[in-house]
Image (cartoon, rainbow, N blue to C red; front, top):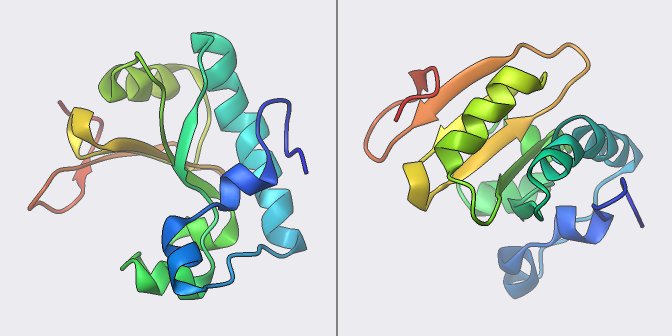
Length: 145
């Protein structure tokens, strides 16, 4: 099932942990609508601008899967509103700064620097909130190198 031009439901729900542990990671109708909006409003514009694939490492997570991997109890991944991703050949910092300047989003998080990933979420009532997460620290305001 296509969620947008370049993104499918299967790539937004795939999880090695869910597969290994036999965890159902099937989103409901509301979560699928949210995933479509995330793809259309955040991920597609990124792909269009950079002309490269957006590699989603974590999209939708069922509550059970989210608990198993130690995710936040309020994670937007469980609502189909968030994805963690990278763009090959583009630094995570550069990617965050482009998103910050050019898109609307709910949260944008530069997670663990260049060896990590970008977390972005979308809701209709977006906040355009930017954070940085480093090893051993709390979330810091802004996108920081």
